[in-house]
Structures are given as structure tokens and as C-alpha cells.
Figure 1 (tube, rainbow, N blue to C red):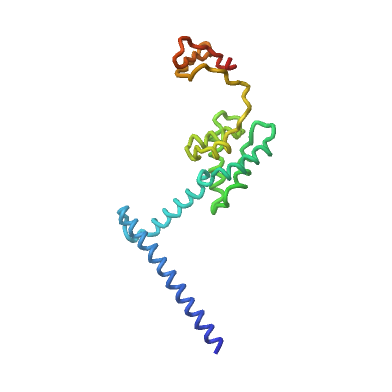
Figure 2: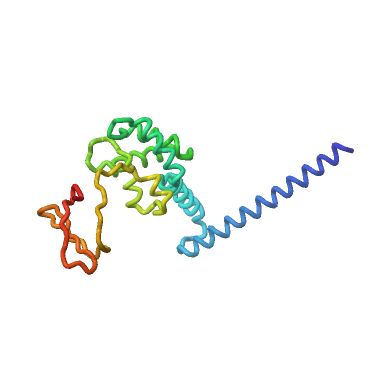
Length: 204
């Protein structure tokens, strides 16, 4: 009797699973049909549509920039400092290893490695076969993939102490002109009858 009830419950569960699977399959079929109609493809060309969906999903999965938030960048930056040390940057093989360590495991690792190689070559514009942290992060910023809020800026920017110190001003600065030939800055303050000249390198 117990076995009969258990078998009945399993049968009911299997039936519900079949219903859910059938409903999901029907929704996918309707979506494919809608896409086929929108793209003016024949209704029997479902295989091509499914393949297109898979390819688009794979491309999105292998788009490295999709995974680079500020937390991920903090961890990558830590490895950069640890591995690069006093060197100028990471070589291609090390860069790929670091990125693979921090990125989610993809369904197609070969494609991801290929994308990382292309990314390295794209950023390494000077062709020295090493990638510095500042080169990497500047490339991300140029692509507009990282928000410009303080958290992201603090993560990305490699700050260094400047030897230039601010100077005193009588009033607010209204205009600044740069003399490229002399490498000097001409500063005009509000309501001032004179302008001031500063060395662009030293700030004095």
C-alpha cells in the first residue's frame, strides 16, 4: 500500500515536471516563432534561430568587460601588484592567467583565452609585450565600461604623491592660459590688474 502511494506521488510529480517542461518548451517555441516572424525567416528554420541565440549568448559570456566591476578590479589590482612587483607590468601569459583566475569559468574557455589575447594586444599599443595596470585601466575607462564614481576611481587610479604644491591666490582664478613654447601657465585672477606666470612643471 505504501509502495503504491509512493509510486502514485512519483507519477504525479513526473506529470507535473512534464507539464512544466512542456510549458517552457511552448514558451521557447513561441519566442522563436515571434523572432522568426520579426526577422522574416521561415517557420521551419528554428534550428538556425536556436543557433543564433546560442552564439549571441556565448559572445556575451566571453565579453570580459561584462564581469569587471570595482570589486573584481580590486582583486585583479592586488594580483598585479603582487606579481608585477618592480617590473613594468605583466606579460601576455601571466596577464591571461590572472584574468582567468578572477573571471567566471566559461562554457568555452578557448574562446575566452582568445579574447584575452586580443584584449592584451589591443591595449599594448607600444608593443613592449607587457601590460601595465595604468594601461589596462585606462583602456577600460576609455570604453566607458566603468562608472566614474569615487569608488571606481579609487580602485582604478594608481595615485602617486605629487611634488607640486598649491600656491596662494588673492582671489579666485578666472582664466588660465598655457604657453606651450615656454611650458608656462599664465593665470588671471578675478578683479586682478596683473597676471601671474607659473612654470608648468614645477608649479612655481
